Image: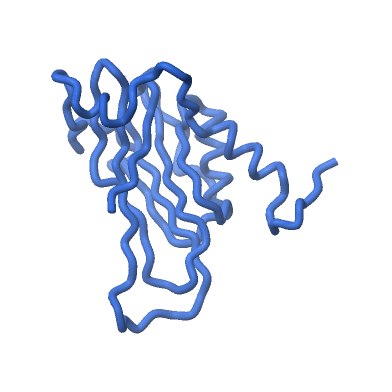
Length: 167
């Protein structure tokens, strides 16, 4: 039996989210160590896999409605990721591909968005750097609760994925 815990979200959504989130085990290198490794490099747009020419998707109304970062390494994870968005996936997850997702959770007005600034890879792991874009002070925004998200395809990797929010 699935019940709501009074948080406005069924437990199943939280469980699905936890199933996608990358866990960092003790002893794993930190995001700073991964990015500072001598062999670290930024994964360029040209290296990213695509589905019909597209390697990322963004929107302002994710079904998950909570702050969440996720990694989908297989078809099941890809389907769950799109359930968190509340849409059908654009296609199957391509072979030798994984996806990362960043969900901002509820925001009080229109005008917020999230973007992945860069992805750094090294022998120590991967760092996904992202930032939240806020509406400009005094901007004309709609009074509507939104939940921005972004998803990006990346070359498949078994490495630990760290998410780093830029300020």
